[in-house]
Image 1 (tube, rainbow, N blue to C red):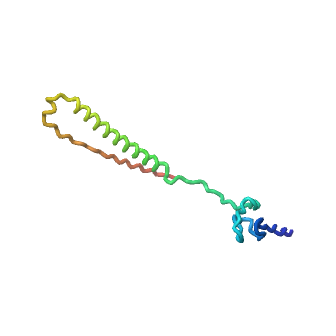
Image 2 (cartoon, one colour):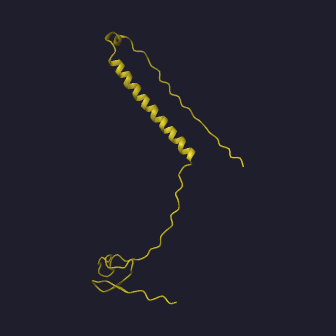
Length: 118
């Protein structure tokens, strides 16, 4: 079976031929989008996206982020409560030498190992 000859498209302004995929006439520059026929373009099959990190790693990162946020929040709240307590202290307590405070920060690292047996 023989394919029919492609239809010749002519610019309505200058009557020059143009391709079906052209947006503008190559001779006069007229916008051809409204005058051209729709063209079927090849589509690319999309592959399903895999998560960037495995689930245990994402969970561990989330737990660390939440723990850090809670630690920062507790620090801010502790400072606010200390300031409030200092502002409500009696006048004679202010005259005393303030005690030095020690801040202790602890970090806990947990390592999990999964062994898959066949």
